[in-house]
Amino acid sequence: MEVTQIEKIRHSLSHIMAQAVLRLFPDTKLGIGPAIDNGFYYDFDFGDQDFSEQKLRKIEKEMKKIIKRNLAFTQEMIPREGAIERLKTLKAEYKLELLDGIEDDPLSFFITGDGEFTDLCRGPHVQRTSEIPIDGFRLIKTSGAYWRGDEKNKMLTRIYGYAFETKEELETYIYNMEEAAKRDHRKLGPELGLFMFSEIVGPGLPIFLPQGNILRETIEDYIKEKKKEYGHQFVTTPHMAKSDLYIKSKHWQKYDAMIPPINIDGDEYTLKPMNCPHHFQVYLNEKRSYRDLPLIIAENAVVYRFEKSGELGGLLRVRGLTQDDSHWFIRPDQIGEQVNVALELMSEIYNDFGMTDFRAEISAADRDNMDNYLGDPAMWDEAESKIEGILKTKEIEYKVNPGEAAFYGPKIDLQAKDTLGREWQLMTIQLDFNQPDNFDMTFTNSEGEDEKVVVLHIAILGSFERFMAIMIENYAGAFPLWLAPTQVKILPISGEKHGEYAHEVAQRLKEQGIRVEVGDKNERIQKRIRQAELAKVPYIAVVGDKEAETNTVAVRIHSKQDQGLQTVDEFINNLNEEINSKTYYLND
Ligand SMILES: [Zn+2]
Ligand SMILES: [Zn+2]
Image (cartoon, rainbow, N blue to C red; front, side, top):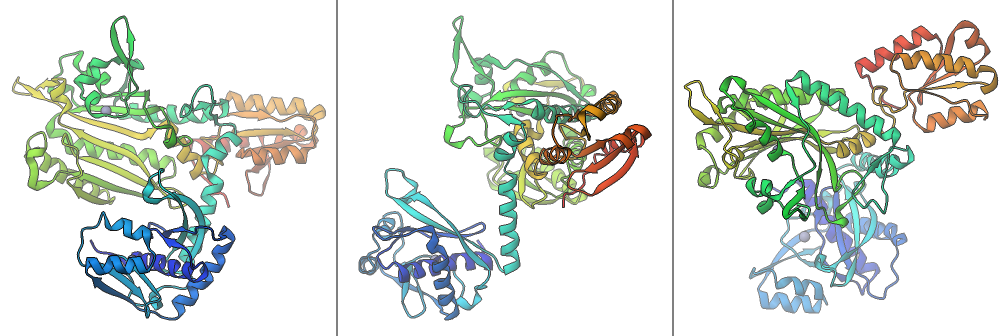
């Protein structure tokens, strides 16, 4: 595989960091040190030496000294026996252990400069240290890491560094990471009263609080309405079913996140891990003809997954999640057309949520091994080429990964970028040529014969939990008006004197379906304005004598200048317009 220059830089920096560490802490033993997505790391065993994170700046300085000497990286191939000797002299016991897993003979070493530093490594690196932008890297943090990832082994100290080709790129990245930490939904969610976890309810089982539930319902109502416009028919299916259902669908045998079964009246039941086989029962409930297709069965349904407790995190990984699931039952000749429709629906929806920068990955079949796949190879060919054609027309950047498809059908995964440029895995379209066999799902074709239907599994948001986490982070909790749990806060200057007018205005807004609260606690107005700002309420309307006399409100938009006086009618019109257009003002 082609190694890019930045990957070489990152990898070379890990060597240079190890060299610098050995200069400063000569008794250190080296673990491994690869390049990673945003930089590099190296695992060190500092033994009894006094190491603390405060030393990172010192190591960084030492690294810069090494880089400035413009040293060359040279490869040396050493026969196995000699390599073992060499590692013994270097007291590189961890590296010696690694040799067990490497069969190469001779072994590749890389030497920095005139031999001050040598590492067992296949490369590649930059030619000389002068290729490394001296302002493009920074050591960020340390963490504990078990040698070879095994908790039975010794805990080493992993030092992480970021590395980019320019100082600007590095700084932007650091800024974005800091911004991301501030936006962390696990922090913002409880702060804004959106969701909570309870020890006794259990990990991975979020509870949505009143404010968070409004956000959730708003998203849910919106998505339901959109999907209905696109012909989805909604159903409701139970949270559990006999294990037999999943044995028939083969999930039981293949899917490893099933919740262990429970026994009821001698039958085994389980909580549903996915909705597909339930929706298949809906399909099978009537005889279908080619004219009935596509038939789209949709449900916003809770499914339960056996996730390990160590892997749970906020709303991104949970044990109970609500998918905006849909199953499209289509004729084989409708694949291209219907994938196109699904992508249309997706872009409409994501546009409304302020995400417009997409990238797709197609998991395709391995052309040389078509025996491994179910269904007619011609159908695969056609499906894959149609998908590519659609993505091209839509100008969505895509990558084809041959051999990545499941045996039962190709898949499209869509990633979108948020306001910080972070990519999120969002919608999936999974074509399925197998479940129609498992459940004998057919339709009567135009010749009057039974023909196998094709199933598309499509979740546009994925799960509401995950999507809410993304929205909280994307907007940093300052939601656009249409999504904000509280849209307007009305603050009377004096609760006693102007409270009645404040409630009158609130009533008029409520009649328009606007989510409004009155903040008439007996506190100074400045303090109440500040609280509303902290709660990230999009609009604050302050009312006093003048406003009450003229039937107006003094309007402030979250983290923006005062907007001045508006009559209540104007205010309502402006709010409605902003809600309906789903406008989003970027916070500055
Ligand atoms: Zn290397
Ligand atoms: Zn499904």
